[in-house]
Image 1 (spheres, helix red, strand yellow):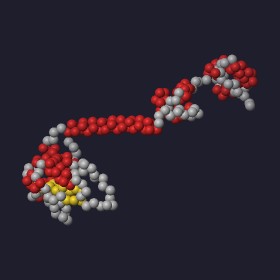
Image 2 (cartoon, helix red, strand yellow; image 1 turned 60 degrees about the horizontal axis):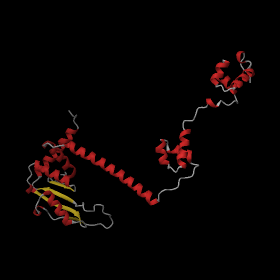
Image 3 (tube, one colour; image 1 turned 90 degrees about the vertical axis):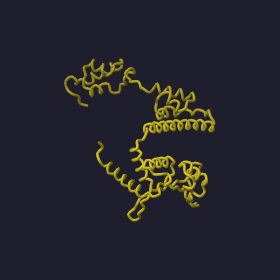
Image 4 (cartoon, helix red, strand yellow; image 1 turned 135 degrees about the vertical axis):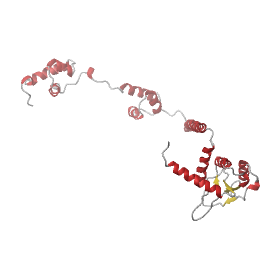
Length: 286
């Protein structure tokens, strides 16, 4: 190799000095300052093949953690326990201890399953509690409804769930169907706001034929506070053996149909109010 003239011309002489200093335990920085060699390429060539002194080697930050992880594994700790204890990633722990024997299982599969089940049940319970807190906070935030607010809610409610007039089939009557008792109660309160007398209401229960028909009829009658004379004959949905019903259980009571007699004028007011809401929704909020 050709070397630069001048101060680096005696390369072999410099190398002897550099190697001697290296063997005395000096670092590259110390050799550089001692020999006044400020070219890193030349400096590395001068000490090539000579290992650095041990004191200059940077300790590996994870060496202590690795040793501790191996110690815990030998004591029978699981990956999860070591991860929590040391704050290391599971992948690192696996790499450090994979050559060690697996700890003996201290629980039967049934015991482990029971513990996991209890943990999952606790998680579900906390989720449900959080769900209920959110719902309760939202409910309390609503407060009392003003007549105008109830009016607007009822119009939207009816337009989503009620019968509507069509150009090809004129049906200017008020007919509301729903299975949610809360929706039924809000709709009845809305009719009260409009001054609709309860004598003008007719009810019909719609329910699957295999359900508790008599129980459902009593439930809806009690909910709306109406006599049986205000109820039409219950409409039964025939069972299709090819389908699997999901609307089963004690809470299934079918749907309730509420029809307002002489409701043409009320229907027109509902439709007009709905389109007023639609139009207002497209205007800037002031």
